[in-house]
Image (cartoon, rainbow, N blue to C red; front, side):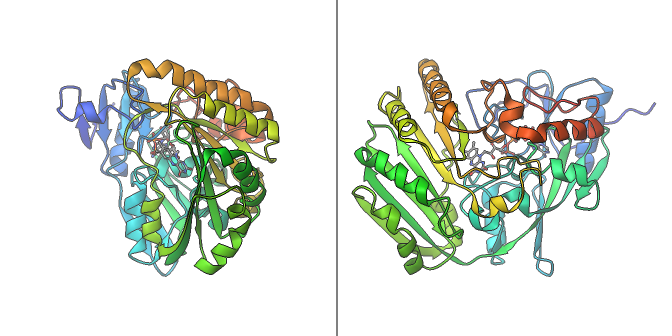
Length: 439
Ligand SMILES: Cc1cc2nc3c(=O)[nH]c(=O)nc-3n(C[C@H](O)[C@H](O)[C@H](O)COP(=O)(O)OP(=O)(O)OC[C@H]3O[C@@H](n4cnc5c(N)ncnc54)[C@H](O)[C@@H]3O)c2cc1C
């Protein structure tokens, strides 16, 4: 039998590039793959999948490397990295863009901006399009334009046999359903995505800051307003620690400044804002403004969807954790959802949490290793303390502490996902700690 040859740019442990290539964005993890294959095209991905099968070697797919639990790297296996498959082709006639699965968000936004269009992706400039889209993908345009996966038209993927498979509404519709929210790394290695694009020009943005003592009032006002306000407005709140002393809110509006000022009234009248800034700026400047990327660092983030406004006791719990945080830089971020996300039912794609009003992210990061345990303990205790007020969490914020993760990420869509997994990857070639099992 003819054996497959590995192709692409291959980085072995003795290569000077290995030290960087072996790491993901979350530097809490340190893994040692046998090699990292930087695929240059779909054929390289096919060869890598076939070769690793022939040699019984475990694999992980990697695009931007931003998995919270570093699910895109492994010890003693091969990382099939698509980050050098990053072409962006805009088709003006169809208002579609075909994007290589390794492209990072900022180059995508910049390239599409040159043609006056965009896709509703996330805020971090270095997140990869593959992981983001496959888990859902939300950002500052979500309430108007839907999740990133809702804007997906077609996908090209290499399956467990190393063959190319296409998926869209007509071709392999079950796979297409699963790839819209089922999470990265489960069904195959995607090599390109085709998205519907949206015209974009100037946007109105705001930023409001209050003293920490206004937190309770601000959270109450925001949650009664942000998920229900005009869908053209998507907003966030950053609740910082008491030691930091602030709470702030920011948002992006697809309309003019005067309309935004009017829409903001219920929020501005909460507490005593110490700074209010409302501006009209080109969309691409807003992308930079909402850039949440700090660069690779050690962190443990987790979170939860909120379907019903948090009662006072839940807000008190949050505030108590922010008072006793072991680290001044810990925070909780709230991101408004609903709007266009709700236009599709929970079983319309694999992304289940369509009915959530918003999502909260519990964030901790540190530098010195001795800070790791107290911070991880803090974030896990916070997650547990809030469980009775929330419903499930986002597959793109995976957390290995969540025991019943199929229910938390996928709700009642998990059964269907297992059947699709069984059809496309019955031997479970694509597996990791929280991957979908073939049923
Ligand atoms: C700083 C930061 C900011 C973020 N901001 C946002 C945000 O604004 N909105 C939001 O929705 N999410 C956000 N996220 C979460 C983000 O969506 C996930 O971390 C996402 O999985 C990252 O995708 P990636 O390709 O960069 O990561 P990777 O680690 O490369 O991949 C993530 C998962 O997808 C798999 N995968 C990678 N490439 C492929 C492929 N080609 N085919 C199939 N599977 C593949 C991997 O094996 C892994 O399981 C953020 C994360 C970070 C760290």
